[in-house]
Length: 462
Image (cartoon, rainbow, N blue to C red; front, side, top):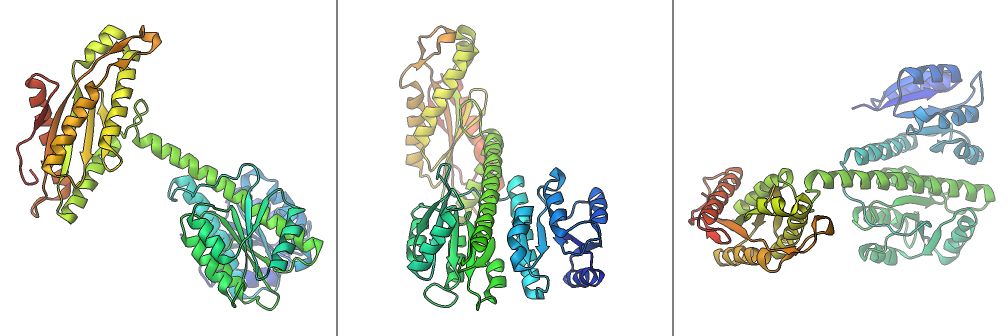
């Protein structure tokens, strides 16, 4: 879907030129010439990006930016301000997401727009549950910023200038240390990397490497670029840097602007992490049984089909075990549903331990459970079924005080089916047939006196 960009510039030639440049690369562009027109358009439609120029007849660009940033409707809409470098700090303080020189060339303009839109898209994907789980960051209330400069003196200068303006922890590392720490799980919240470290452009390669590793891909990244290396700015943004900044931090204003940019990235990352964690919680709730913590039927059946597909690809068998607690209704009738819940939770714990991490344990409903073990031989499947049965009856289950306390002993019947794939049976059909065979074996176990294992007759995929 084409991104919608709103251009606001009081100078008609600048406004028209910018609209033409953006439309040429297929952005959907609306251009306005005043603050009043901008706010009127925003009442009708919310864009993906606002680009602010200057020369407004009804207020300064900084005033307009401040007005936008204070509007709760527009809190998630990034603002790119076209402002001279000496106005960058004021623009960031007014709420701009980023700034560019008014005479910026096409390569840099498009790279910055792509970068901003990509970060906005990443935020939306996190809200919708499309992103992977984040790496574990645990730095308390003080985020960790890793500084990777071309020499120790510059890194020390960065730390001095930034630590006076940010309540963060700073660590100075070389590229090998940064990569090693990320691989070992000692992750950072943000990396500030010089574009040229040991060789020209090797900071860009380090950026790409860190962004590709699970331990550091969810961090923020800022590239520090020298005045004679401006050609790297667009490349850095396209490679995934959240922002770029001068490598010198020679003035207090430059250091303050850099600190604001870093803080903005940290805030964005924190919001993204929170959204991602919320999505993961909802996904977990959707596929687990709240009482026992086992997977539920909604997750278990597609997972069984997945295991069947893997078995077909590797030509290795898998075992399906249907488990049902014997006379469970008597527990509820004699001790109450609170006691029944305690029994189900404890049995689930014993089943999970018996199946182990390589297998699947699920509650299918009521007192019915399912276990699936991939890459399983007949002997191992039979042993596992007996282990599960014995684990359930191994020791009495303590009942909660609300139900009168004491203990109760329970047993389980187990039906087992072992499947060996064949070429003329589809994996999904293989999974369905395996479950049916295990259910029939379970019925035979209950009919045969309960508290026993019955193995379905061996068949190839049926």
